[in-house]
Length: 266
Ligand SMILES: Nc1ncnc2c1ncn2[C@@H]1O[C@H](COP(=O)(O)OP(=O)(O)O)[C@@H](O)[C@H]1O
Ligand SMILES: [Mg+2]
Image (tube, protein in one colour):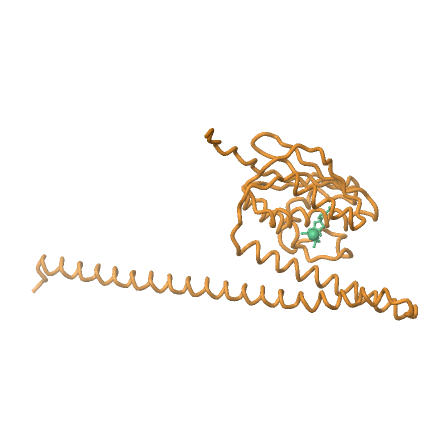
């Protein structure tokens, strides 16, 4: 006897309910797997961050003690040379570890926003470089411009651009920083007179671990500009480079100017 229409309908409903059930189970399992993966990724980043952080302290000690030894007047020529190499290697490893730490921190932690006067920040950073004997110039009479930003991360962003400008330029070449208020955006530029960057490299240099050809001799792992881009984009801004081989390089950051808060006239 063929199944009645009612029985057929019931079978169909049963089948649909079974599929629905399976779909629900699948959805739950996928969500659980996703949560597990996210958790594991966060754990891995945590561990990496802690390792990098724990490496920094002994590395800084090695670098510091080596510097201290270099002041010792009774070193032989060869001893001085070896201590100098220890100091240099420790300094390089400190830089690399610090960059790894920075890139993980920028990706993971949230911004601590407050009104930041970009001009005051640039002024303090450029003075710090001048104190260390670097030719970094900035017009101190630039009118103040405020952005809604994370001062520590903005400083890190600027530091990455200035250290690049200095390390890729011939010793003693001037690095110029400028801040121009262009209404809704403020333009911060860092210019150098170094070797420049070929146009076909302009997009690639912002990718993590990418270094332009001919760069290998300079210390670094290729994370600095990726960090710069991440920080500026998290502030709602952009970064670009204006350069060609033999022409020096200008890195241009555009950030939204902080809209004035309504003032109460009490
Ligand atoms: N001011 C500059 N002048 C010339 N090349 C630069 C400059 N800044 C960055 N670059 C190029 O972009 C690459 C990526 O820069 P970055 O991410 O800071 O890495 P790193 O400094 O570790 O090499 C550099 O390796 C270099 O090839
Ligand atoms: Mg760099």
